[in-house]
Amino acid sequence: MLLAVRLSPDKTVFQVLLVLHLITAFVAFAPGFVWPAISSAFRRKGQSIGPDLSAVAAKTTLRVQGTAAVLTGLFGFGLVSTSKLGNADEAYYGFDQTWIQIALLLWFVLLGVVYGLLYPALRKAADGDESSEPRVPMFTGIVHLLLVLLIIDMVWKPGL
Image 1 (cartoon, rainbow, N blue to C red):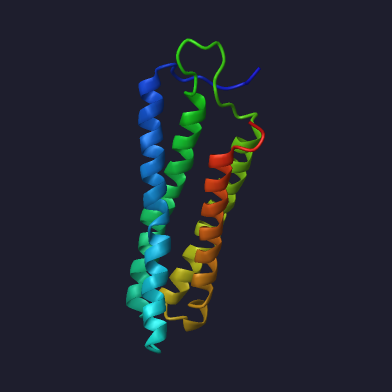
Image 2 (spheres, rainbow, N blue to C red):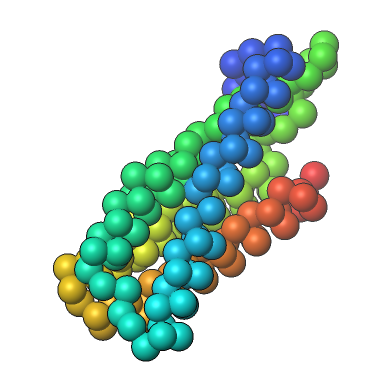
């Protein structure tokens, strides 16, 4: 028996949450692909990104990427909670399933990387600390790796 909190058995609520989950995921990870390309273009020219562009990147990361990453996970919670489809007695997805627990763990790690590593490195670069610039691509790469792991987890659903 699956143990899941059921907010609503309505399939439409589940579908709306799924759309919101996917949209916020795209918004959360898009900057992680755009900023490295911009940074790489500057490095190829032998230039620093500079404090102005770094300040924009830092603000965008916190306000857009960070917020969307948080919302993606919260909508994921909603998906699990509303996964009772049709007239089934039990929810289709539950917080006791291995793949959902893995996704939760990866999501918390992702938030830690974005808020604890990436954003501070961007903020330091915005303050003119050029030594922090090389850490930004590394932390962005970790975010990319976490995205790949999350997608693999959600496609193959280990333990389901």
